[in-house]
Amino acid sequence: MARYPGLTLRVLTTDVPAIGPGKARLIELIDKTGSISAAARAMDMSYRRAWQLVDALNQSFSEPVVLTAVGGKRGGGAEVTGFGREVARLYRDMEDKASSAIAAELNRFKQSLKKSARK
Image: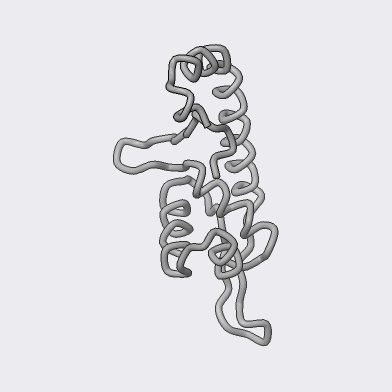
């Protein structure tokens, strides 16, 4: 479910999306759960896909976004770094600003749609 209906913000690098709504949500859920697998389950995503997104995040930024630990008594885990929290917060701030900036136009656009498509 989109946080802002009508708006999907993706921040791009020259090669790949650095962050979008899915990666931001993944960071937030890993931070909340301490686990990539738990975050993946909450997003109805495979662990493999979630791990690929974490790897892409860590490759895209100048500092790690998520640190992982394997094995051990607790079976490993994941920790969002302070930098990762800042990345997610900045993304959400940009999303809020973009949504505010287009609110009037989006409302006018919706009014132009057929009633069945306005939902």
